[in-house]
Image 1: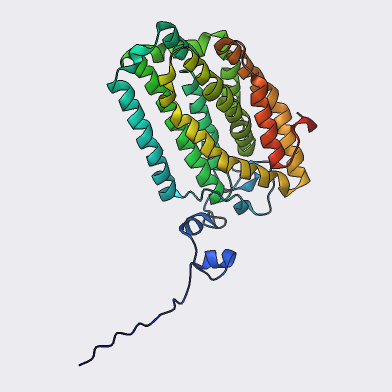
Image 2: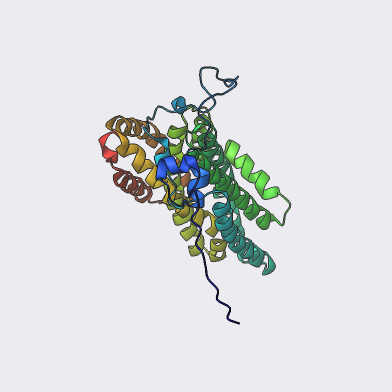
Length: 332
């Protein structure tokens, strides 16, 4: 008896969902496409928001920016919930290993009292700045239009919450989990003159109603200065003062900010190149916000770094703006 095995190929009736087919055609879709595009509700709402009855629940007019298609803001990282969680879990595993190593080897004992005080007075209050960043991104998630941008804003908000928590853990490592350093950092944040411009910037920004303006403020202006001054020049200052081990505790923040730029820069470029009106609007926002951000970080850097090179940080903003399609010097 001869056994002959044959295979039959059964073609699927549909390659993907109808709403994905309407946008991308009848072909197999990626998981990112299936869970990100054209799934936000647009019609047949039962009620308007009680806190703002002039708007619908999902309303593009929560920002002055105008886009023909809000779904052009796709994430180059293609993060949906599953992909985001897996990627950040790997970063968190590394961070947890670093913190455990720091604590197990009692590396805090290698820090001088002057360095510890420097960390308390110059780094720990940034947990409030990161909490503000969390709220900025939450605004984009709540009031943005199109799932591709709102879900990415939510992921960014969770990143900032994690960064605030890691900064808090640095404080607990410094004082042996008593919480004294965090209380001291809070007092410095509330009362020290060096922090008041930055605190004012954070508090006033939370009254801003335009979510994309907040997006510009956070991802282009504040993050550029934080990456250059706080996690760049201040990190180098720690190395020069015998606190090289602190680098492993802020690596998570550096990695997150670098990863967030892979998403925020293309979003800024798409918004700018959409129309001349958008370009002019964004430049107007930057002309208004940049002096405030520069003043806030200049005051902090003078206190924390002494001879900080803030021009390097401003150059980063200029370069990112140029890549997005506009010159920072036009209006700012």
